[in-house]
Length: 232
Image (tube, rainbow, N blue to C red; front, top):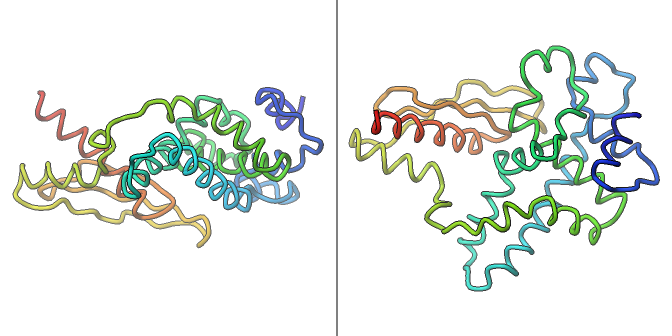
């Protein structure tokens, strides 16, 4: 069975045409080695990002009627970030269906949060084009139910960079510093790598599709490192 057909069966969705779902599974690195394979999933990723944002925003608006805009934004960010979407993608085992170039696969791209998040967005984009908004909403709310049902306190959802700043001031009297390590890829699919430094020491590294996203991941790693030094 072709990967797209197997994935459609796993998702419980009957596509009339599997070409869109196949496209959703093609990473740009695969086309560098197999240029005749068609088109990468980047355009579907762009569409899926907006579709997911709309559906999750609406769901949170209904679930938290007393939350203000800032609180809803914080809750949404926890789900639709690269970290949040990659968690859903891993739960669905979508990564095993991704067409990757040999070099990218050897470099561990199949496990990278930003790649998995983009894959999930691409699949969502394909589902939206095939079935429309209502069916996509039904599917997305079902697969994201664990995240939507967690109902964490807003304190628990406090941005990682804010938490790291508080810890950094407490430890060193200074704010943390974020250093750009690399910035690679085409303009529409850039990947940033950033280090978080506390007191001049690099404590975390993050990757993301924007510098802000990479800084957030780096801050999370740095927080873990600081917590370990506290408990050791």
